[in-house]
Image (cartoon, rainbow, N blue to C red; front, side):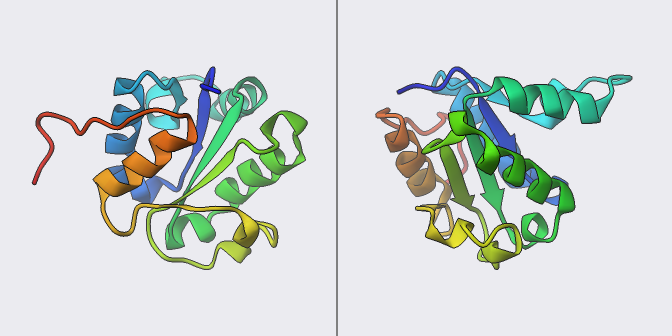
Length: 142
């Protein structure tokens, strides 16, 4: 089932990985709520995050040491874990190896989408979650 909108939880220091991921998802027709592009100046960012979490129907979580140490990432994940509509719709994206149990004791049981072996391989696996094929960007670096 294709998502209406994916909430993308991440730690700010991982933006260099997250931005191309967001662009790839959007290019493949997956609507993504991403704080860097969806929160504009003068908005109450806390309220915007809450509204997006309440609206989105999929939750993707970019995992890294930065994310594992982030209280905000943990808060977003714990909210998603409590919501019935996110059941079987939480996608842990392994960007860098980390102790995911720092975020939740349940997270190690989730099937991870592994990006540690390469961006294209990770994207291919992620698109399969929704039954989509993956097409690399024309201008992607080798």
